[in-house]
Image (cartoon, rainbow, N blue to C red; front, top):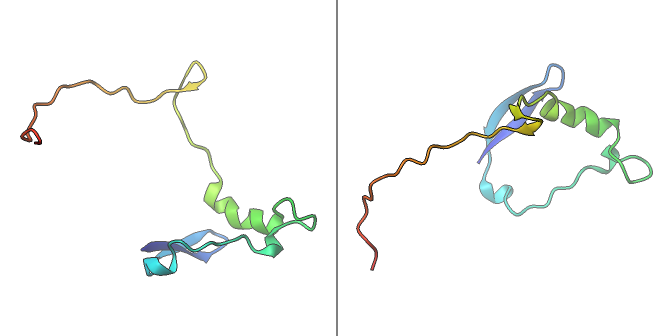
Length: 86
């Protein structure tokens, strides 16, 4: 499986790596305890510093009257190519 591996924090840089899928799939990973505030409820600054480069920025989504405007597909009929199933 291809993974992203953080190379540096500032500036944020990453490389790619390869790992066995067996080491990744169906393995529960939790947020480290030192990324949670003392009250155990909210993420602290360490967590925010880690995730900020992954989530910062804006998605420029086209809108129509304030709602997202999605692509309109043309309904073009296509000739069947496969024989009927029995």
